[in-house]
Image (cartoon, rainbow, N blue to C red):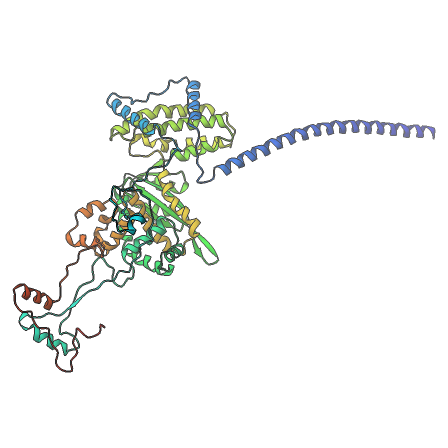
Length: 601
Protein backbone atom coordinates (compact mmCIF):
# COMPACT_ATOMS: atom_id res chain seq x y z
CA UNK A 1 0.00 0.00 0.00
CA UNK A 2 2.81 2.37 0.94
CA UNK A 3 4.63 1.54 -2.25
CA UNK A 4 1.58 2.27 -4.35
CA UNK A 5 1.12 5.63 -2.62
CA UNK A 6 4.74 6.61 -3.27
CA UNK A 7 4.39 5.72 -6.92
CA UNK A 8 1.31 7.89 -7.23
CA UNK A 9 3.12 10.81 -5.62
CA UNK A 10 6.03 10.43 -8.00
CA UNK A 11 3.71 10.34 -10.96
CA UNK A 12 1.97 13.50 -9.79
CA UNK A 13 5.29 15.21 -9.22
CA UNK A 14 6.47 14.33 -12.72
CA UNK A 15 3.24 15.57 -14.20
CA UNK A 16 3.52 18.79 -12.21
CA UNK A 17 7.08 19.31 -13.42
CA UNK A 18 5.95 18.71 -16.99
CA UNK A 19 3.13 21.20 -16.49
CA UNK A 20 5.56 23.79 -15.16
CA UNK A 21 7.83 23.19 -18.16
CA UNK A 22 4.85 23.55 -20.47
CA UNK A 23 3.89 26.79 -18.77
CA UNK A 24 7.43 28.12 -19.25
CA UNK A 25 7.32 27.18 -22.92
CA UNK A 26 3.94 28.80 -23.36
CA UNK A 27 5.08 31.97 -21.64
CA UNK A 28 8.13 32.10 -23.92
CA UNK A 29 5.88 31.58 -26.93
CA UNK A 30 3.51 34.27 -25.67
CA UNK A 31 6.41 36.71 -25.33
CA UNK A 32 7.46 35.87 -28.89
CA UNK A 33 3.92 36.38 -30.16
CA UNK A 34 3.70 39.69 -28.37
CA UNK A 35 6.93 40.82 -30.01
CA UNK A 36 5.66 39.69 -33.41
CA UNK A 37 2.35 41.46 -32.78
CA UNK A 38 4.19 44.69 -32.13
CA UNK A 39 6.15 44.26 -35.35
CA UNK A 40 3.04 43.40 -37.32
CA UNK A 41 1.24 46.40 -35.85
CA UNK A 42 4.08 48.68 -36.90
CA UNK A 43 4.11 47.13 -40.38
CA UNK A 44 0.35 47.52 -40.63
CA UNK A 45 0.62 51.18 -39.69
CA UNK A 46 3.31 51.69 -42.31
CA UNK A 47 1.21 49.93 -44.93
CA UNK A 48 -1.80 52.01 -43.97
CA UNK A 49 0.30 55.15 -44.37
CA UNK A 50 1.42 53.92 -47.81
CA UNK A 51 -2.17 53.22 -48.78
CA UNK A 52 -3.23 56.67 -47.65
CA UNK A 53 -0.39 58.20 -49.63
CA UNK A 54 -1.25 56.18 -52.73
CA UNK A 55 -4.90 57.09 -52.33
CA UNK A 56 -3.98 60.76 -52.08
CA UNK A 57 -1.80 60.39 -55.19
CA UNK A 58 -4.69 58.81 -57.10
CA UNK A 59 -7.04 61.58 -56.01
CA UNK A 60 -4.50 64.17 -57.10
CA UNK A 61 -4.10 62.52 -60.51
CA UNK A 62 -7.74 62.58 -61.56
CA UNK A 63 -8.48 63.60 -65.18
CA UNK A 64 -8.20 67.29 -66.02
CA UNK A 65 -5.70 67.80 -63.19
CA UNK A 66 -2.55 69.72 -64.19
CA UNK A 67 0.51 67.48 -64.22
CA UNK A 68 2.98 70.27 -63.58
CA UNK A 69 6.35 70.15 -61.90
CA UNK A 70 8.71 73.00 -61.11
CA UNK A 71 11.31 73.70 -63.78
CA UNK A 72 14.10 74.26 -61.28
CA UNK A 73 13.46 70.84 -59.74
CA UNK A 74 13.55 69.23 -63.18
CA UNK A 75 16.84 70.95 -63.95
CA UNK A 76 18.36 69.78 -60.68
CA UNK A 77 17.18 66.23 -61.35
CA UNK A 78 18.62 66.33 -64.86
CA UNK A 79 21.99 67.51 -63.56
CA UNK A 80 21.90 64.73 -60.99
CA UNK A 81 21.39 62.15 -63.74
CA UNK A 82 24.30 63.59 -65.73
CA UNK A 83 26.51 63.45 -62.67
CA UNK A 84 25.46 59.87 -61.88
CA UNK A 85 26.43 58.59 -65.32
CA UNK A 86 29.33 61.01 -65.76
CA UNK A 87 27.85 62.43 -68.96
CA UNK A 88 28.61 65.99 -70.17
CA UNK A 89 25.63 68.30 -70.75
CA UNK A 90 24.24 67.89 -74.29
CA UNK A 91 24.90 70.74 -76.69
CA UNK A 92 21.99 72.93 -77.71
CA UNK A 93 23.05 73.05 -81.33
CA UNK A 94 22.56 70.35 -83.90
CA UNK A 95 25.13 67.70 -84.60
CA UNK A 96 26.06 68.75 -88.12
CA UNK A 97 27.44 71.97 -89.51
CA UNK A 98 24.67 72.20 -92.06
CA UNK A 99 21.93 72.80 -89.53
CA UNK A 100 23.95 74.43 -86.75
CA UNK A 101 22.96 77.99 -87.59
CA UNK A 102 19.31 77.15 -88.19
CA UNK A 103 18.94 75.18 -84.95
CA UNK A 104 20.63 77.92 -83.00
CA UNK A 105 18.27 80.44 -84.52
CA UNK A 106 15.31 78.31 -83.47
CA UNK A 107 16.68 78.16 -79.93
CA UNK A 108 17.07 81.92 -79.89
CA UNK A 109 13.52 82.33 -81.10
CA UNK A 110 12.28 79.97 -78.41
CA UNK A 111 14.11 81.90 -75.70
CA UNK A 112 12.92 85.24 -77.04
CA UNK A 113 9.32 84.04 -77.09
CA UNK A 114 9.47 82.99 -73.47
CA UNK A 115 11.47 85.97 -72.22
CA UNK A 116 9.52 88.22 -69.95
CA UNK A 117 6.30 86.19 -70.26
CA UNK A 118 5.32 84.48 -67.04
CA UNK A 119 2.39 82.18 -66.53
CA UNK A 120 0.49 84.80 -64.54
CA UNK A 121 1.12 88.23 -66.12
CA UNK A 122 0.05 91.18 -64.02
CA UNK A 123 -1.97 94.15 -65.21
CA UNK A 124 -5.00 94.49 -67.46
CA UNK A 125 -4.70 93.13 -70.97
CA UNK A 126 -5.28 95.72 -73.70
CA UNK A 127 -8.47 95.27 -75.74
CA UNK A 128 -8.38 95.45 -79.53
CA UNK A 129 -11.38 97.62 -80.50
CA UNK A 130 -10.53 98.08 -84.16
CA UNK A 131 -13.08 95.55 -85.49
CA UNK A 132 -16.03 96.71 -83.37
CA UNK A 133 -18.79 98.84 -84.93
CA UNK A 134 -18.95 102.30 -83.41
CA UNK A 135 -22.06 103.79 -81.85
CA UNK A 136 -21.48 107.52 -81.29
CA UNK A 137 -23.30 109.29 -78.47
CA UNK A 138 -22.80 113.07 -78.48
CA UNK A 139 -23.81 114.93 -75.31
CA UNK A 140 -23.95 118.73 -75.12
CA UNK A 141 -23.95 120.64 -71.81
CA UNK A 142 -27.46 121.47 -70.56
CA UNK A 143 -26.52 125.18 -70.30
CA UNK A 144 -25.61 125.29 -73.99
CA UNK A 145 -28.70 123.32 -75.04
CA UNK A 146 -30.95 125.72 -73.09
CA UNK A 147 -29.87 128.74 -75.16
CA UNK A 148 -29.47 126.89 -78.44
CA UNK A 149 -25.72 127.45 -78.45
CA UNK A 150 -25.99 131.24 -78.55
CA UNK A 151 -23.13 132.90 -76.76
CA UNK A 152 -20.98 129.73 -76.80
CA UNK A 153 -18.22 128.55 -79.14
CA UNK A 154 -17.23 124.93 -79.62
CA UNK A 155 -13.60 124.57 -78.58
CA UNK A 156 -13.11 120.78 -78.56
CA UNK A 157 -14.36 117.35 -77.51
CA UNK A 158 -13.65 115.00 -74.66
CA UNK A 159 -13.90 111.42 -75.93
CA UNK A 160 -14.02 108.25 -73.84
CA UNK A 161 -14.85 104.74 -75.02
CA UNK A 162 -16.66 101.79 -73.45
CA UNK A 163 -17.44 98.28 -74.62
CA UNK A 164 -21.23 97.74 -74.66
CA UNK A 165 -23.49 94.85 -75.51
CA UNK A 166 -26.67 94.77 -77.59
CA UNK A 167 -29.22 91.95 -77.40
CA UNK A 168 -28.91 89.25 -80.03
CA UNK A 169 -30.29 90.42 -83.34
CA UNK A 170 -32.92 87.83 -84.19
CA UNK A 171 -34.76 89.54 -87.02
CA UNK A 172 -37.86 88.77 -89.03
CA UNK A 173 -36.71 88.26 -92.60
CA UNK A 174 -39.63 89.08 -94.89
CA UNK A 175 -39.03 88.13 -98.52
CA UNK A 176 -41.36 90.02 -100.87
CA UNK A 177 -41.42 88.64 -104.40
CA UNK A 178 -43.30 90.93 -106.76
CA UNK A 179 -45.73 89.57 -109.34
CA UNK A 180 -45.81 91.08 -112.83
CA UNK A 181 -47.93 90.70 -115.93
CA UNK A 182 -46.48 91.45 -119.39
CA UNK A 183 -47.77 94.54 -121.24
CA UNK A 184 -47.06 95.80 -124.78
CA UNK A 185 -46.17 99.52 -125.06
CA UNK A 186 -48.80 100.16 -127.74
CA UNK A 187 -51.72 98.80 -125.75
CA UNK A 188 -50.88 99.81 -122.18
CA UNK A 189 -54.17 101.56 -121.49
CA UNK A 190 -56.34 98.95 -123.21
CA UNK A 191 -54.67 96.00 -121.47
CA UNK A 192 -54.76 97.74 -118.12
CA UNK A 193 -58.47 98.45 -118.56
CA UNK A 194 -59.04 94.80 -119.57
CA UNK A 195 -57.17 93.58 -116.47
CA UNK A 196 -59.45 95.66 -114.27
CA UNK A 197 -62.39 93.55 -115.37
CA UNK A 198 -60.57 90.22 -114.79
CA UNK A 199 -59.93 88.44 -111.55
CA UNK A 200 -56.29 87.62 -112.45
CA UNK A 201 -53.96 88.81 -115.19
CA UNK A 202 -53.64 86.40 -118.09
CA UNK A 203 -49.92 85.73 -117.36
CA UNK A 204 -48.18 86.36 -114.03
CA UNK A 205 -44.42 86.40 -113.51
CA UNK A 206 -43.12 85.91 -109.94
CA UNK A 207 -39.56 86.49 -108.85
CA UNK A 208 -37.84 83.21 -107.86
CA UNK A 209 -36.92 82.62 -104.26
CA UNK A 210 -33.20 83.39 -103.67
CA UNK A 211 -30.97 80.35 -103.76
CA UNK A 212 -29.36 81.43 -100.48
CA UNK A 213 -32.71 80.93 -98.69
CA UNK A 214 -33.96 77.45 -97.85
CA UNK A 215 -37.47 76.78 -99.22
CA UNK A 216 -40.13 75.46 -96.82
CA UNK A 217 -37.92 76.17 -93.80
CA UNK A 218 -38.66 78.89 -91.27
CA UNK A 219 -35.04 79.36 -90.19
CA UNK A 220 -32.43 81.15 -92.24
CA UNK A 221 -28.99 79.47 -92.40
CA UNK A 222 -27.62 82.33 -90.31
CA UNK A 223 -29.85 81.33 -87.37
CA UNK A 224 -29.12 77.63 -87.91
CA UNK A 225 -25.39 78.33 -87.74
CA UNK A 226 -25.79 80.26 -84.49
CA UNK A 227 -27.71 77.42 -82.86
CA UNK A 228 -25.16 74.84 -84.05
CA UNK A 229 -22.21 76.82 -82.69
CA UNK A 230 -23.94 77.44 -79.37
CA UNK A 231 -24.77 73.76 -78.86
CA UNK A 232 -21.78 71.95 -80.35
CA UNK A 233 -19.16 74.64 -79.92
CA UNK A 234 -20.14 76.34 -76.65
CA UNK A 235 -21.85 73.29 -75.07
CA UNK A 236 -25.16 75.11 -74.55
CA UNK A 237 -28.08 72.64 -74.62
CA UNK A 238 -31.16 73.60 -76.59
CA UNK A 239 -33.24 74.26 -73.47
CA UNK A 240 -30.68 76.85 -72.33
CA UNK A 241 -30.76 78.46 -75.74
CA UNK A 242 -34.55 78.59 -75.44
CA UNK A 243 -34.19 80.55 -72.19
CA UNK A 244 -31.62 82.86 -73.78
CA UNK A 245 -33.92 83.54 -76.75
CA UNK A 246 -36.69 84.50 -74.34
CA UNK A 247 -34.41 87.12 -72.76
CA UNK A 248 -33.68 88.47 -76.24
CA UNK A 249 -37.39 89.00 -76.83
CA UNK A 250 -38.24 86.12 -79.18
CA UNK A 251 -38.73 82.58 -77.86
CA UNK A 252 -37.44 79.73 -80.02
CA UNK A 253 -38.66 76.44 -78.48
CA UNK A 254 -36.13 73.64 -78.19
CA UNK A 255 -38.31 71.36 -80.31
CA UNK A 256 -38.21 73.92 -83.12
CA UNK A 257 -34.44 74.22 -82.85
CA UNK A 258 -34.10 70.44 -82.94
CA UNK A 259 -36.27 70.35 -86.05
CA UNK A 260 -33.86 72.73 -87.77
CA UNK A 261 -30.75 70.72 -86.87
CA UNK A 262 -31.96 67.69 -88.84
CA UNK A 263 -32.02 69.39 -92.27
CA UNK A 264 -28.73 71.13 -91.45
CA UNK A 265 -27.12 67.76 -90.81
CA UNK A 266 -28.63 66.40 -94.01
CA UNK A 267 -26.66 68.85 -96.18
CA UNK A 268 -23.37 68.78 -94.23
CA UNK A 269 -22.65 65.14 -93.36
CA UNK A 270 -21.34 64.42 -96.85
CA UNK A 271 -18.61 67.02 -96.34
CA UNK A 272 -17.40 65.20 -93.21
CA UNK A 273 -17.56 61.84 -94.98
CA UNK A 274 -15.40 63.23 -97.78
CA UNK A 275 -12.93 64.62 -95.21
CA UNK A 276 -12.57 61.20 -93.55
CA UNK A 277 -12.21 59.42 -96.87
CA UNK A 278 -9.37 61.71 -97.91
CA UNK A 279 -7.73 61.26 -94.49
CA UNK A 280 -7.66 57.48 -94.80
CA UNK A 281 -6.29 57.60 -98.35
CA UNK A 282 -3.67 60.34 -98.14
CA UNK A 283 -2.75 61.14 -94.50
CA UNK A 284 0.81 60.48 -93.33
CA UNK A 285 -0.06 60.29 -89.62
CA UNK A 286 -3.44 60.14 -87.89
CA UNK A 287 -3.77 60.92 -84.19
CA UNK A 288 -6.70 59.28 -82.43
CA UNK A 289 -8.31 58.87 -79.04
CA UNK A 290 -11.77 58.06 -77.66
CA UNK A 291 -14.12 58.98 -74.82
CA UNK A 292 -17.44 57.74 -73.51
CA UNK A 293 -20.77 59.02 -74.84
CA UNK A 294 -23.84 57.87 -72.87
CA UNK A 295 -26.99 57.44 -74.95
CA UNK A 296 -30.41 57.28 -73.32
CA UNK A 297 -32.10 53.89 -73.30
CA UNK A 298 -35.14 52.53 -71.41
CA UNK A 299 -34.39 52.76 -67.66
CA UNK A 300 -30.66 53.24 -68.26
CA UNK A 301 -27.96 54.83 -70.44
CA UNK A 302 -26.05 52.81 -72.99
CA UNK A 303 -22.30 53.31 -73.18
CA UNK A 304 -21.39 54.54 -76.66
CA UNK A 305 -18.04 56.00 -77.65
CA UNK A 306 -16.78 58.98 -79.64
CA UNK A 307 -13.52 58.65 -81.58
CA UNK A 308 -11.52 61.58 -82.92
CA UNK A 309 -9.14 61.33 -85.89
CA UNK A 310 -6.73 64.20 -86.63
CA UNK A 311 -5.16 63.71 -90.04
CA UNK A 312 -1.91 65.70 -90.23
CA UNK A 313 -2.81 69.41 -90.44
CA UNK A 314 -5.75 68.75 -92.77
CA UNK A 315 -8.87 67.46 -91.04
CA UNK A 316 -10.37 66.75 -87.63
CA UNK A 317 -13.04 64.06 -87.95
CA UNK A 318 -15.24 62.61 -85.19
CA UNK A 319 -16.88 59.20 -85.42
CA UNK A 320 -19.14 57.30 -83.02
CA UNK A 321 -19.30 53.61 -82.24
CA UNK A 322 -21.35 51.34 -80.02
CA UNK A 323 -18.26 49.39 -78.97
CA UNK A 324 -14.74 50.35 -77.95
CA UNK A 325 -13.14 47.30 -79.55
CA UNK A 326 -10.59 46.26 -82.14
CA UNK A 327 -13.38 45.51 -84.60
CA UNK A 328 -14.70 49.07 -84.32
CA UNK A 329 -11.35 50.79 -84.80
CA UNK A 330 -10.41 48.45 -87.65
CA UNK A 331 -13.68 49.24 -89.41
CA UNK A 332 -13.22 52.99 -89.07
CA UNK A 333 -9.60 52.88 -90.31
CA UNK A 334 -10.28 50.50 -93.18
CA UNK A 335 -8.00 51.29 -96.13
CA UNK A 336 -5.59 53.48 -94.17
CA UNK A 337 -1.85 52.99 -94.55
CA UNK A 338 0.41 55.20 -92.51
CA UNK A 339 1.30 56.12 -88.94
CA UNK A 340 -1.22 56.00 -86.08
CA UNK A 341 -0.51 58.13 -83.01
CA UNK A 342 -2.47 56.72 -80.08
CA UNK A 343 -2.16 55.46 -76.52
CA UNK A 344 -1.26 51.87 -75.65
CA UNK A 345 -4.85 50.63 -75.44
CA UNK A 346 -5.17 46.97 -76.53
CA UNK A 347 -7.86 47.78 -79.11
CA UNK A 348 -5.22 49.22 -81.44
CA UNK A 349 -3.11 46.06 -81.54
CA UNK A 350 -5.32 44.55 -84.23
CA UNK A 351 -4.66 47.37 -86.71
CA UNK A 352 -0.89 47.04 -86.25
CA UNK A 353 -0.80 43.31 -86.95
CA UNK A 354 -1.15 43.68 -90.73
CA UNK A 355 1.84 46.01 -91.02
CA UNK A 356 -0.05 48.63 -93.03
CA UNK A 357 -0.37 50.91 -89.99
CA UNK A 358 2.73 51.86 -87.99
CA UNK A 359 2.34 52.33 -84.25
CA UNK A 360 3.37 55.66 -82.70
CA UNK A 361 3.05 56.14 -78.95
CA UNK A 362 2.56 59.30 -76.93
CA UNK A 363 5.28 60.63 -74.63
CA UNK A 364 2.67 62.46 -72.55
CA UNK A 365 1.11 59.13 -71.60
CA UNK A 366 4.53 57.79 -70.66
CA UNK A 367 5.27 60.93 -68.65
CA UNK A 368 1.96 60.59 -66.77
CA UNK A 369 3.07 57.29 -65.25
CA UNK A 370 6.26 58.85 -63.89
CA UNK A 371 4.33 61.88 -62.63
CA UNK A 372 2.04 59.61 -60.62
CA UNK A 373 5.12 57.97 -59.09
CA UNK A 374 6.21 61.25 -57.48
CA UNK A 375 4.37 60.35 -54.27
CA UNK A 376 6.06 56.97 -53.86
CA UNK A 377 9.59 57.60 -55.19
CA UNK A 378 10.05 61.33 -55.61
CA UNK A 379 13.74 61.56 -56.48
CA UNK A 380 13.78 58.85 -59.13
CA UNK A 381 10.50 60.05 -60.65
CA UNK A 382 11.89 63.58 -60.92
CA UNK A 383 14.94 62.26 -62.78
CA UNK A 384 12.76 60.48 -65.36
CA UNK A 385 10.53 63.53 -65.75
CA UNK A 386 13.61 65.71 -66.29
CA UNK A 387 14.84 63.47 -69.12
CA UNK A 388 11.42 63.46 -70.80
CA UNK A 389 11.21 67.24 -70.41
CA UNK A 390 14.47 67.58 -72.35
CA UNK A 391 12.88 65.73 -75.28
CA UNK A 392 10.03 68.22 -75.41
CA UNK A 393 12.45 71.11 -75.08
CA UNK A 394 14.38 69.85 -78.10
CA UNK A 395 11.13 69.39 -80.03
CA UNK A 396 10.06 72.98 -79.33
CA UNK A 397 13.44 74.36 -80.39
CA UNK A 398 13.23 72.50 -83.72
CA UNK A 399 9.62 73.44 -84.38
CA UNK A 400 10.34 76.16 -86.95
CA UNK A 401 12.99 74.24 -88.89
CA UNK A 402 12.13 73.31 -92.48
CA UNK A 403 11.83 69.71 -93.56
CA UNK A 404 13.90 67.54 -93.85
CA UNK A 405 16.28 69.54 -91.68
CA UNK A 406 13.88 69.27 -88.76
CA UNK A 407 13.97 65.46 -88.90
CA UNK A 408 17.76 65.29 -88.69
CA UNK A 409 18.22 68.06 -86.12
CA UNK A 410 15.58 66.73 -83.75
CA UNK A 411 16.78 63.14 -84.06
CA UNK A 412 20.48 63.98 -83.56
CA UNK A 413 19.76 66.00 -80.44
CA UNK A 414 17.23 63.55 -78.98
CA UNK A 415 19.24 60.33 -79.29
CA UNK A 416 21.71 61.17 -76.46
CA UNK A 417 18.76 61.86 -74.14
CA UNK A 418 17.08 58.58 -75.09
CA UNK A 419 20.30 56.64 -74.53
CA UNK A 420 20.66 58.27 -71.13
CA UNK A 421 17.05 57.31 -70.32
CA UNK A 422 17.79 53.68 -71.23
CA UNK A 423 20.82 53.64 -68.94
CA UNK A 424 18.75 55.18 -66.15
CA UNK A 425 16.07 52.48 -66.54
CA UNK A 426 18.62 49.65 -66.52
CA UNK A 427 20.25 51.03 -63.38
CA UNK A 428 17.10 51.50 -61.28
CA UNK A 429 14.88 48.69 -62.58
CA UNK A 430 16.14 46.17 -59.98
CA UNK A 431 16.09 48.68 -57.10
CA UNK A 432 12.51 49.91 -57.20
CA UNK A 433 9.55 48.38 -55.38
CA UNK A 434 7.90 45.61 -57.42
CA UNK A 435 4.41 46.42 -58.66
CA UNK A 436 4.80 50.00 -57.43
CA UNK A 437 3.94 53.12 -59.37
CA UNK A 438 7.49 53.65 -60.58
CA UNK A 439 7.72 50.01 -61.62
CA UNK A 440 4.58 50.48 -63.72
CA UNK A 441 6.07 53.59 -65.32
CA UNK A 442 9.28 51.80 -66.25
CA UNK A 443 7.27 48.83 -67.52
CA UNK A 444 5.20 51.11 -69.76
CA UNK A 445 8.34 52.69 -71.19
CA UNK A 446 10.00 49.33 -71.88
CA UNK A 447 6.88 47.88 -73.51
CA UNK A 448 6.36 50.91 -75.77
CA UNK A 449 10.01 51.78 -76.34
CA UNK A 450 10.08 51.29 -80.12
CA UNK A 451 6.78 53.10 -80.67
CA UNK A 452 7.91 55.98 -78.45
CA UNK A 453 11.05 56.41 -80.58
CA UNK A 454 9.18 56.51 -83.87
CA UNK A 455 9.41 60.31 -83.98
CA UNK A 456 13.13 60.00 -84.76
CA UNK A 457 12.35 58.76 -88.28
CA UNK A 458 10.31 61.75 -89.47
CA UNK A 459 9.92 65.32 -88.29
CA UNK A 460 6.19 65.32 -89.08
CA UNK A 461 5.48 62.89 -86.22
CA UNK A 462 4.48 64.52 -82.95
CA UNK A 463 5.91 63.45 -79.60
CA UNK A 464 2.54 63.57 -77.90
CA UNK A 465 -1.12 62.94 -78.57
CA UNK A 466 -2.44 65.81 -76.47
CA UNK A 467 -4.20 67.29 -79.52
CA UNK A 468 -6.63 64.37 -79.50
CA UNK A 469 -7.38 64.77 -75.81
CA UNK A 470 -7.96 68.49 -76.33
CA UNK A 471 -10.49 67.80 -79.09
CA UNK A 472 -12.39 65.39 -76.83
CA UNK A 473 -12.69 67.92 -74.01
CA UNK A 474 -15.79 69.37 -75.66
CA UNK A 475 -17.57 66.02 -75.37
CA UNK A 476 -16.55 65.72 -71.72
CA UNK A 477 -17.85 69.22 -70.97
CA UNK A 478 -21.01 68.42 -72.87
CA UNK A 479 -21.69 65.43 -70.61
CA UNK A 480 -21.88 67.85 -67.68
CA UNK A 481 -24.41 70.01 -69.53
CA UNK A 482 -26.74 67.62 -71.29
CA UNK A 483 -25.79 64.44 -69.33
CA UNK A 484 -26.52 62.08 -72.22
CA UNK A 485 -27.48 61.97 -75.88
CA UNK A 486 -31.16 61.37 -76.55
CA UNK A 487 -30.48 58.75 -79.23
CA UNK A 488 -27.97 57.71 -81.85
CA UNK A 489 -29.24 60.43 -84.17
CA UNK A 490 -28.15 63.09 -81.69
CA UNK A 491 -24.77 61.41 -81.44
CA UNK A 492 -24.47 61.41 -85.23
CA UNK A 493 -25.30 65.12 -85.37
CA UNK A 494 -22.67 65.81 -82.73
CA UNK A 495 -19.87 64.03 -84.63
CA UNK A 496 -20.74 65.82 -87.88
CA UNK A 497 -20.96 69.36 -86.52
CA UNK A 498 -17.98 68.90 -84.17
CA UNK A 499 -15.87 67.75 -87.13
CA UNK A 500 -16.61 70.95 -89.02
CA UNK A 501 -16.16 73.24 -86.00
CA UNK A 502 -12.86 71.64 -84.93
CA UNK A 503 -11.52 71.72 -88.50
CA UNK A 504 -12.38 75.42 -88.71
CA UNK A 505 -10.25 76.04 -85.62
CA UNK A 506 -7.44 74.02 -87.24
CA UNK A 507 -7.45 76.31 -90.29
CA UNK A 508 -8.23 79.62 -88.58
CA UNK A 509 -11.78 80.03 -89.91
CA UNK A 510 -14.70 81.68 -88.15
CA UNK A 511 -16.86 78.58 -87.54
CA UNK A 512 -20.18 80.42 -87.40
CA UNK A 513 -19.60 82.30 -90.65
CA UNK A 514 -18.28 79.13 -92.29
CA UNK A 515 -21.31 77.07 -91.24
CA UNK A 516 -23.71 79.78 -92.40
CA UNK A 517 -22.13 79.95 -95.84
CA UNK A 518 -21.83 76.16 -96.02
CA UNK A 519 -25.53 75.74 -95.27
CA UNK A 520 -26.35 78.22 -98.05
CA UNK A 521 -24.18 76.69 -100.73
CA UNK A 522 -24.17 72.95 -99.92
CA UNK A 523 -27.67 72.24 -101.37
CA UNK A 524 -26.49 73.64 -104.72
CA UNK A 525 -23.07 71.90 -104.79
CA UNK A 526 -22.29 68.68 -106.67
CA UNK A 527 -22.36 65.67 -104.35
CA UNK A 528 -19.18 64.29 -105.93
CA UNK A 529 -17.21 67.44 -105.02
CA UNK A 530 -18.14 67.84 -101.35
CA UNK A 531 -14.49 67.77 -100.29
CA UNK A 532 -14.09 71.20 -101.85
CA UNK A 533 -16.41 72.56 -99.14
CA UNK A 534 -14.24 71.29 -96.25
CA UNK A 535 -12.52 73.89 -94.02
CA UNK A 536 -9.16 72.84 -95.46
CA UNK A 537 -10.17 73.78 -99.03
CA UNK A 538 -12.71 76.48 -98.19
CA UNK A 539 -10.53 79.52 -98.92
CA UNK A 540 -9.51 78.18 -102.33
CA UNK A 541 -13.06 77.15 -103.18
CA UNK A 542 -14.47 80.59 -102.36
CA UNK A 543 -11.78 82.24 -104.48
CA UNK A 544 -12.83 80.15 -107.50
CA UNK A 545 -16.59 80.62 -107.19
CA UNK A 546 -18.52 81.94 -110.15
CA UNK A 547 -20.97 84.84 -109.94
CA UNK A 548 -23.96 82.60 -109.20
CA UNK A 549 -22.36 80.83 -106.22
CA UNK A 550 -20.95 84.10 -104.88
CA UNK A 551 -24.47 85.48 -104.84
CA UNK A 552 -25.62 82.41 -102.90
CA UNK A 553 -23.08 83.12 -100.14
CA UNK A 554 -24.47 86.62 -99.58
CA UNK A 555 -27.02 87.20 -96.85
CA UNK A 556 -30.39 88.18 -98.40
CA UNK A 557 -30.58 91.44 -96.45
CA UNK A 558 -27.05 92.43 -97.50
CA UNK A 559 -27.36 91.57 -101.18
CA UNK A 560 -28.29 94.15 -103.83
CA UNK A 561 -31.35 93.00 -105.70
CA UNK A 562 -32.29 94.55 -109.06
CA UNK A 563 -35.56 96.50 -108.80
CA UNK A 564 -37.92 97.90 -111.38
CA UNK A 565 -40.69 100.49 -110.86
CA UNK A 566 -44.25 100.34 -112.10
CA UNK A 567 -44.19 100.22 -115.88
CA UNK A 568 -46.79 103.00 -116.27
CA UNK A 569 -45.08 105.25 -113.75
CA UNK A 570 -41.78 104.73 -115.56
CA UNK A 571 -43.33 105.74 -118.86
CA UNK A 572 -44.89 108.76 -117.21
CA UNK A 573 -41.50 109.86 -115.98
CA UNK A 574 -40.00 109.36 -119.45
CA UNK A 575 -42.83 111.39 -120.97
CA UNK A 576 -42.31 114.24 -118.50
CA UNK A 577 -38.60 114.24 -119.23
CA UNK A 578 -39.40 114.60 -122.97
CA UNK A 579 -41.73 117.56 -122.19
CA UNK A 580 -44.73 115.48 -123.21
CA UNK A 581 -48.01 115.29 -121.35
CA UNK A 582 -48.11 112.30 -119.00
CA UNK A 583 -50.16 109.27 -119.86
CA UNK A 584 -53.63 109.28 -118.31
CA UNK A 585 -54.31 106.86 -115.54
CA UNK A 586 -56.26 103.83 -116.73
CA UNK A 587 -59.95 103.95 -115.93
CA UNK A 588 -62.15 100.98 -115.41
CA UNK A 589 -65.58 100.44 -116.95
CA UNK A 590 -68.63 101.06 -114.87
CA UNK A 591 -69.12 98.39 -112.26
CA UNK A 592 -65.49 97.22 -112.44
CA UNK A 593 -63.09 97.55 -109.54
CA UNK A 594 -59.65 98.99 -110.08
CA UNK A 595 -56.68 96.82 -109.15
CA UNK A 596 -55.14 99.82 -107.45
CA UNK A 597 -58.11 100.23 -105.11
CA UNK A 598 -58.66 96.50 -104.53
CA UNK A 599 -57.66 95.42 -101.06
CA UNK A 600 -54.58 93.27 -100.96
CA UNK A 601 -55.20 89.55 -100.81
